Amino acid sequence: MNVMYKNLRASSFGAFVIALILATGASAQIIPPTHNIGNDPATEGFTFSAPNGAGLTLEDDGGLWHMELQQVAGYTASPAIMTGDGDFTFTAIGRVNSLSGNNSDLFTFAFLPGNPALERNWNFSFLSDLSGIWDRQAGKTGGVPNESYTVPGGVTTEHTYQVTREGSVFTTYVDGVEAFTNLEGGGGPLDNAVFSVFNASSNSPTSDSHWQLWQFEKGINIVPEPSSLLLLAIALVGLVNVRRRR
Image (tube, rainbow, N blue to C red; front, top):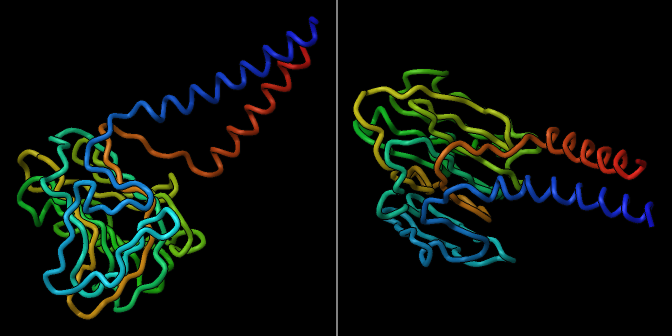
C-alpha cells in the first residue's frame, strides 16, 4: 500500500507540473480577431481583399486554412487589432508550400502600428527560395536593413513564427529563436496594430500556404525553443522517476 501511495503521489506531482506549464501558456489575454485551424478567416474578423490580384484557392484543407494567392491579395484585420500602445505577441503557425516571383514580390506578414506609417511598418516576408524569412522593415532605425534568417528545414515544413512589440522594440522569432529585431523610430504613440497577411506586389507573384493559427495576445509570450522543450521533458521524466523511487 505504501509503495502504491508513493507511485500515485509521484505521478500526481508530474501531472501537476505539466498542467501548471500548460495553464501558464493558456492564461494569456488573447486579442481578437484570431484565425484557428481550417476556419475561413473571413468568418473570424478578417477581411479578404484582392485589389490587384485574386484568391485562387481559399479553403479548409485537412484542418488548415489553405491560401493560394496571386498578385496583390490577402487578409487584413479590420478594424485594427486593439493592442493599444502596450506590449504584444503575434503568433502564426503554418507552412509556405511554394512561391513565385523574386524577393521584393513575396508573401508577407505586415504590422502598421501608429504613425508615421513608414517608420512604424514592421513586416517579414518569405524568401523566394523557401529557405527562410526576410526582414522588409521600412524606415528601420535599428538592426540590419533587409536582414534574412535561414529557417531550419526551410519554410515548407510547419513552424511557429512570432513577432513581439516590447516597448519600442519589434523582434521576430522562429520556433522560439530570435531571427531579427528593430528599434522603433518616428516618435509618437505606437497605437493599435493594423495587421495584414498578403502578397506584397502586383508583379505576378503567386504564393501557396497552409495556416493553423494567427493570434495576438497582450504581453510577451515566446514559445520555448525545441531544445528547451526537450530538456524540460527530460527533467520532468527524471523528476518523476526520482520521486517514484522514494
